[in-house]
Length: 371
Length: 79
Image 1 (spheres, rainbow over the protein chains, first blue to last red):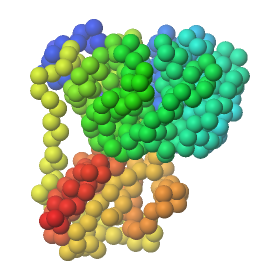
Image 2 (cartoon, rainbow over the protein chains, first blue to last red):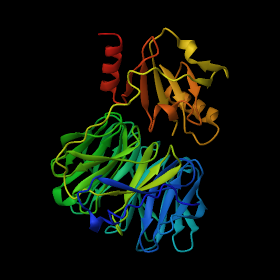
Image 3 (cartoon, one colour):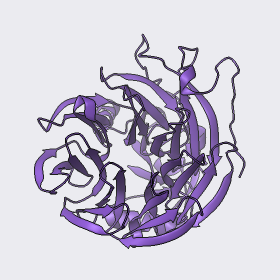
């Protein structure tokens, strides 16, 4: 498939090395159609490819990062959500939520090597090359599976809590953190013995984590609260709550660890948060309903999976440092205007419903998607 | 509260049914699979709440956080 939305601006050359304070703090590079409900992204830096877990298509789209073409679709189990790539073995791992398994793909041949059964509804994974371990959060199983990256044997299944999903690992402190969406909590484990060494109650809808080992900090997204918690990993306590855009769900760190990128599913944007100051530096517009996010270490570009648009966005963060002015979210131009006329099918009755059905009443339209 | 489902990518009814069962959702649900209403309104993510006054005027837009939604409802009723 062809790339769309390419907007090259010769005034602002490509690449993180070319970061400058510019007229716009971001640049859109491309928006590329992939499969249905893309959620997770992993990058093969050597072959310049992105692997995109398309949960409603039950396949992984493979995108050539030079041409922006989709070059393959690799069938997985049902509902692949999260995805990762181990550079040492060249293996790609997809967490197939509805199949209770991890699919292992050979990134060279683009063929499925094998599958590894895990707990119920695996929805998050992370791999730690230093430990040669893959950690998988099983939401319905309320467990964390630990898999050897080389032998693919499951070396441990650790009790977590309902909604276990995103996992972060601090290799310095040898600490694994499992984030539990439903329980709104995080469990902290010794990464060698898997003994639980701490637990935190967090804001509602905890769903992504990033770790900055040199600062001894973790950043955990609270999607319903619309914030990111800064966690002191030595004290295991929340030290700050940072406001983001609407309904944050995904998070990744910039390679320099000076900023955190957070996808705002409710706003179609990425918040850029300063690691040191905890301030929101900018918001980068992407596609509709963004979720998974990763930074391409080759060029510093940010890749975002847009579940609503069925695309991935490639954007550049052009900020060299914190901007002088804070982010100001512009209110919708529709505020104070009349709601447009609509005629939509009622899911329960099949009838067409219009504005007239609620004439004279006060009401809230809640736009939602089931993913 | 009127729910409006969008961007499912597939036939929306089974997805909405599963979602409603999982979360115990009742009340009216409209289907906007192609964004016929969401598109012109500039909806770019979910959830997005649009608070509408009795004369059809939009009073708040977005309000995904609970505190924002509560404030919008209070404002709507002059509380």
